[in-house]
Picture 1 (tube, rainbow, N blue to C red):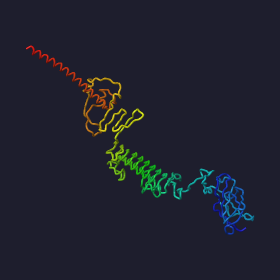
Picture 2: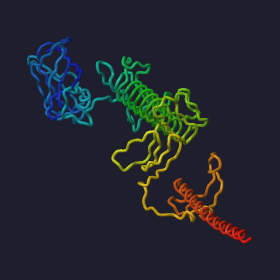
Picture 3: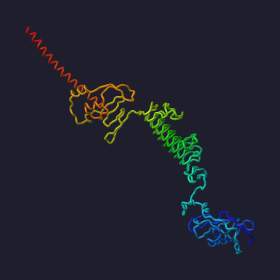
Picture 4: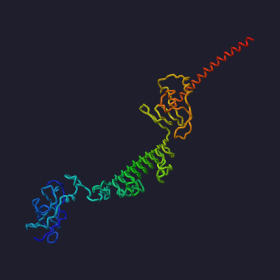
Length: 500
């Protein structure tokens, strides 16, 4: 037999499950006389220990193996579970026409685990895999990509930050191949959306979704950005844009639910949706609507063009060029509802509460349906309200009252006469001087409802009316006495004149 040489391109590669006695494919290259072999050959393979000191399996012989242009392949069943086997040596022998088997070189090292690394996954599903060793992915620091129509649709990047030599997290970038996570960012997620070359339905200069800081998230949509624009991935971590278009959650832990052209620049700020809304203050919230600015820390803005002034650190583009408050935290603690009116509704200082509406209702009524009353401000279920003209109106219908008791107007007058009255000013107020009794004195004198810290206008008005009635009774009594005395005087005068 002429000299032959086998070159093993792939010693063994798995083509079915890693079960006991599973078939493996042995592929090799056979040269005969210095040229690629063609014809039928007998091939015998044996597994030896890695030190070649002992045989692990009996030789397996394949007769009349077809070799074409030097290439051959045979399915080998060693009768053992090679998936759990250690590294071994594969000895190959060959003969033609019963010329006698010839050992081809030194036995080739064969590591089943290495062979498994090149296994193919069946597109119709696999069985018998080992979750700890069978996987799709990479074994180095390179990203893993999945493509559709030969364009990247999903990219998984290991973080450069390691713990015990392993990445502590990954970046997941799905959707448009233009979607991106800025360099150095870890733990980012872009679930989808974006557009590689722009969407003809939504023309925009910014078309991709991107994450600029650690653990930021963009759920989808178009042209959305979670995190800051600088090169430091720690400035605005954990920012989230759920979707929508051209939204920018640039503050740390900030959130935008959706809508278009919204921005959440403050730390822990949020925008519910709508269009052109800006939450600039820390812990601020723009609920939705259009053109609203929650510029102060701990502020809330909603409706249409409700503007809470931001602090002096706001840039030209923040909060639609709303005037600045003159301090660092804007008109903090303010609540502003702009309604549906087209004009601007703006705060002038911190801790303000403003509602621009034709009618306002607070409280409940014990009925199945409550109709919103038009043109007034109701604060209780009784119907007390502030009129559109600015007059406070108390509820006072007889049908709302019970346990009626008569009063002594003269006694009330006496208590009013002895009630201490002074002028005074409220603390921390610039509204000027007031005149009236103290709530504690009022409570002690009349014992009416209340906590002794305030005076109800209903009670104050009732006391005043009772005192007027008492004063009227007093005047009537005095007038009656005077009339009686005058009549007596007149009678005496007439008697005197008659005796002359």
